[in-house]
Image 1 (cartoon, one colour):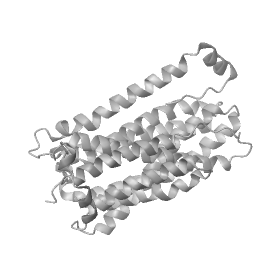
Image 2 (cartoon, helix red, strand yellow; image 1 turned 180 degrees about the horizontal axis):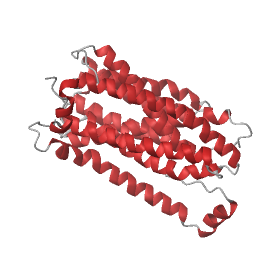
Image 3 (cartoon, rainbow, N blue to C red; image 1 turned 45 degrees about the vertical axis):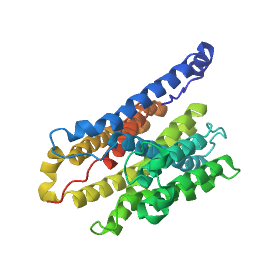
Image 4 (cartoon, one colour; image 1 turned 120 degrees about the horizontal axis):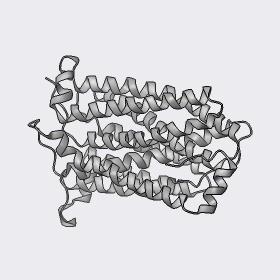
Length: 335
């Protein structure tokens, strides 16, 4: 993830060397490759000695859903931080190049891959002849999968248009579709679960994507006061987002695993183990966020808060990968 260069000397050194940009790109590729191992290898590790069986192709499905979540976070964060930047007095006009079109393409491919799984009866298709695209219109999951595919197409077109802010509508459709998909009508009180997932996913997208775009924005600014103000605005909203994520996450977990069984299921089921890992990761990320906020308020150079903020972005990327893995694992049994 990108690093702010608060002094002109550092900026000039980067340009003269000509290598840091390539080094950062290589580092990002390495992190993405390592992150992909979490959903790919995670199912077998989480299911070990639990007596549970994963759905066919669980690793591939987890990877596709991780890519879909990441593709959702990027444009949502850009829209969020762009609005915050407009509220910063004296903010520079410079903005980093939008990653929204690329994110929409990634989201489209991921959604298309997930739709192909639904079209094959929730199995990994071995050939095109095994898929029944027309059957997608006949099932709830198929319609939701098609909605996500089309929504990412529209989001990409909006990102390339003169009014990129209109992305919020197709992106909102993706969030709604994911919330509905995660809670089928056969579930106990599905509307409650859908509402919890809706809030959880929206707040998580704002937190993850917002921090990434804020750091990218600050790297292009040469106005420390405006940069510190933008980070301060983001930090105040992020506290509310974290509270909402925590509350909805706890409530959703208690719906999946009743209080009297949650301790045992956190260690004896694949879903519980992965959920426990996610909780620990979020706690570590929250600690990094607190460290960044303290440096922002108490250190002479507020932009030094970007160091823990960059580590926070990496940690959030891992959380997204674990979240993708969580959706591909068998749900715990309500004992």
